[in-house]
Amino acid sequence: MAKKSLIATLALSFLAAISAVAFAAPAINGAGATFPYPLYAKWTYDYNKQTQLKLNYQSIGSGGGIKQIKAGTVDFGASDAPLSAKELDEAGLMQFPMAIGGVVPVVNIDGVKSGRVKLTPSVLADIYLGKIKKWSDARITAINQGVKLPDERITPVYRADGSGTTWIFTNYLSKVSKDWSDKVGFGTAVKWPEGVGGKGNEGVATYVKRIKNTIGYVEYAFAVQNKLTTISMQGKDTAFVEPSMASFSTAAAGANWKNTPGFSVILTDTDAKGAWPIAGATFIIVHKKPANCENAKAVLDFFDWAYKNGAESAKALDYVPIPKQVYDIMENAWFKEIRCDGMPVSKK
Image (cartoon, rainbow, N blue to C red; front, side):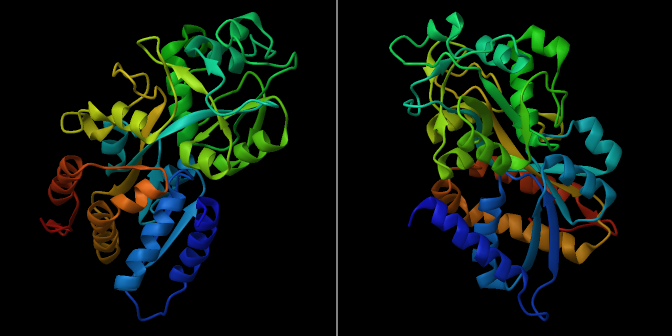
């Protein structure tokens, strides 16, 4: 079955799962990042068949997920932007990664296939700064000899909502361009110098598909599912890299989860040879002292199951699963940090 059809089927199944019978296991509620929605839908469908757990996940963007978990209106939040250890401590939260992927620039240029257009970090930043305005600009054609690029204006497309995808993308641009860092910076939402905004990965993908000569950025799974044209990016070793499961895994391979405060690991612009430079993890955020202990246990039980049983589903949907040595670290942290009435919510 084609992946796009699979996603549609899973979405329907997901809706069916969350409307399961009232005497089933407790309903849990989450909200946040759009990037992991297809994966969480698949995991929920499979887990529901075994346990009857009802899970309602609102795909509203990382910014919304962070706000809702801080306000205590959901049992878990989801974000592609890791919160700092300080921010976690101040709000009484902890976070843990559930999958790894990549943010990929995508284009709509007649006659151009995926991987054919190459961009350097500085060129990508200057396109979004509005300093490079046409595909025929000498800085673009110099690194794309043999590729027919139009003498047409570039329309940058960005996320209009608060977004972890934007956090990862702008974090990367801030690392590779001092001009971007000084003028724009990074965050789940920034003041964009140029372009048009779309809501969610879906909104950006729709704009790029419909408008000629655009460039946007989406999570890799959305690029694949929507058959968008991806580009190659120059890495730190000056070699050009295409987005792939392998290049995302390479970016994540050297991450030091154990010794990073708050597990706030950032995977952009890594030194690893062959690594996709705009990679990142997607995180779940929960309260260390949850108000609803039963729901908190159900949340951790679900994500424990996903760690141990969801790797193949993740790969099938173009996500990189979390390695066992990493989720062992996370589950030990659950036992130590997440407590109700002084007792651990999860079991070792």
